[in-house]
Length: 122
Image (tube, rainbow, N blue to C red; front, side):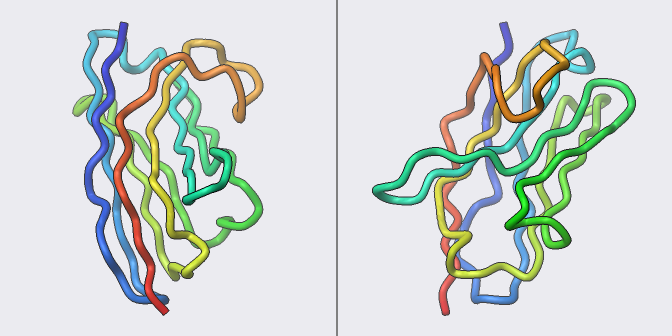
């Protein structure tokens, strides 16, 4: 029902910043919970952050708290992930995801983007 396209990845030095964007299709964008996941080479995909449909509640994995910020602009059908103080261990492919189920912010995502590469050098 919704298509997601990530952008904004790239190469950055440790301590630097990147802002990822995820553009979505659909007239009911505001009804979706939106999340970001990441997957490093040889590792499983892990949850990074999510934001709710209406009240803007956010949830983060502990390793990114205080450094990453998720936000959404419903008028632009876009969700963002601002990443500050990047570390080499943040290197991964980052995926945008969406779902309508408002429960369990780390699970149950139905729609996925193709991913964007983030590489942090030391």
